[in-house]
Length: 478
Image 1 (cartoon, helix red, strand yellow):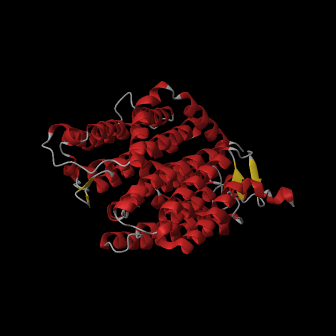
Image 2: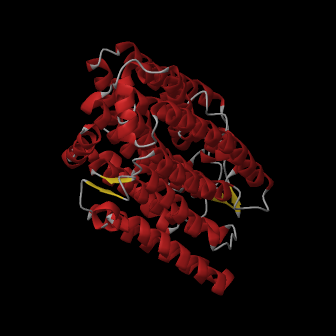
Image 3: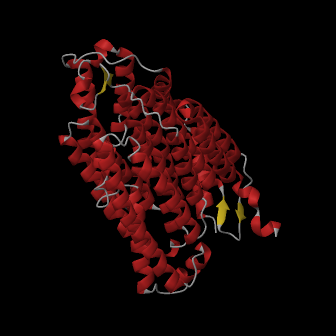
């Protein structure tokens, strides 16, 4: 029985679940006075969970092979938990400033994170769907957590309706896959796909599952929810949405396509190429006309998903490693940019217009410098971290013979550089729009971390390259 259950393989998930429920009870008992305490305990819980993840034995399966722990799962889980922790740090000052006295906020982040790390380790379509829905339900509530704000309520409703549709599409694809493969286990599906010509039902199931997961990563044409939800949700929630769920969903897409559907690479590569091209072009050109910085970052995230999919479409160990490297660098850059957006607060009002950054170098030179570094990195200017992220995915595409895809990626990068550099121009060359409120220490730490990482990555890239390579190899291992 021990060999079948191996419950200790899921120890990080069990600890996170129990801690989240304990904090929920604590919040109910203390009510409004519990927000700060629950937030700090939630950060400690995320740190403990990450430590347990890093200390996990691997490779190891549990619960009758429904749950898998390997280097790939450990890499992604650590990144997701780190992203959740950084987003939670950004929320501390925001919630106090906006008087959002809801102790449920950090608990919802914990439950969303629990769902994400569960679906990353899923080795069966049923366990994947359970993790996906646990994460999604918490995210729906987070989007509308500021329920007195009409925009937040609208964002939550839009995300819920479209997210439910995406979940239904995913579940239908899983049902078709089960019907034609005769199993929901990844190894069984892989055997059915590799046995001979794929049945039409399996191909349709593959398309539906891919479409549902493409919604979760906001790839075009499944991106329609992203700008409105990013703009309407509270800024720390938007920061969380833009990093942790996106990385987790891309990881799940990688495991599903490279694992059970690995033999159908010719079919799903075509889908990924189309998703990548459409996402890069929409992300580049649609952002040019945005006046709200959160909407701009929404289209920016759509474009970055397109770049990551270039490496995935290239396939092989180098391509998968490039995706993991790209998403890790993207998470650090993006959460730090949102730290700068959280700091955009003037006279008791949160500022969201890009023009509000005008002349920032005069009133807050440190913040302006950090944001400039991050914008250069997001644009892919060498020798910053963002440059190497794009370089690796482009090289993977060229080595795989997908040079037209790499060409479109370079073109989209040139176009997107315009709106990134426009922000730098506003901060350093335009008439000051007024000073922001003093920077909170937690926000300052997140922003500084992103800036130092972007600049210093070139000095010591080897550790991340080595760990990402090991994760990619474990994903391809039979």
